[in-house]
Amino acid sequence: MNRIASIAASTVRPIGPMLFEFLASCLIFVAAALAGFLILLGLFALGVASSVDILFYRGVLLCIFAFVLTIVLVAWIGRRGGRLSLRDAVAAGFLSLGLNLSMLIVVPVTLDRSVSIFMLGYMASHQDRAFTSAEIGTALRDVYLGRFNQVERRLDEQRLTGNIVRSQDGSYTLSPQGLAFVTWARRIGWLFNVDSRLIDGASSMPPAANPTGTSAPLEATKRSPADSR
Image 1: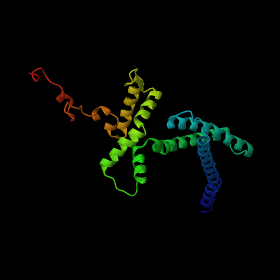
Image 2 (image 1 turned 135 degrees about the horizontal axis):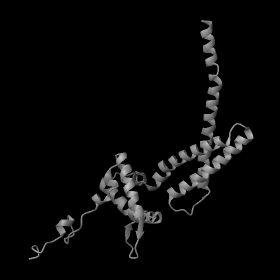
Image 3 (image 1 turned 90 degrees about the vertical axis):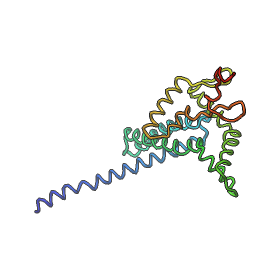
Image 4 (image 1 turned 60 degrees about the vertical axis):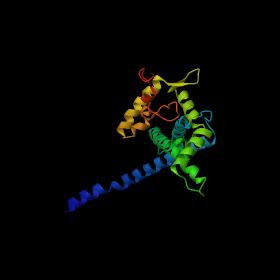
């Protein structure tokens, strides 16, 4: 019995220092991730890379800057304290990078591009009234797409990205890179059960207008020689 108790005691005894090291490491990495996030916010506030007009690309660039600065900061602190190695600093930097990229996509990029956010903001600016779905649609058409020029903005972004090409007459065509991106997006959308209509825009093209000004299917606007008699 004494032998069993001795074995149990010798097994449990190292758990205390191991638990302390685990908690200390968690605290260090949490602090590093927080520092990386604060660095990212500081870079945005200072206007670093403000010449990059597309928020997502600017954010990715600043996340990389924050990643490097986080590694330097953690390595410097580790060198002074003697507890952290360069490997720990690099690991902390990658943790910060992953969290910053996730935050960038989930929050600021969504706020910058979401139609739903605009809709809620428009309703918040007119809290004294109620809206029908048709009135919200009118606001999207007249304000979001019209006054804010969001169609032109999206086209310009895709042109700068290389997904579309602008012709001399002002029309746009899809580039091979853009076609490859759409193919990739369809596959990813299939994996996550995304509504395919949001990716395959061909099925949502509006019907052609007939000479009377009303909408009609494209086939209905075509006349055969027999019809012209």
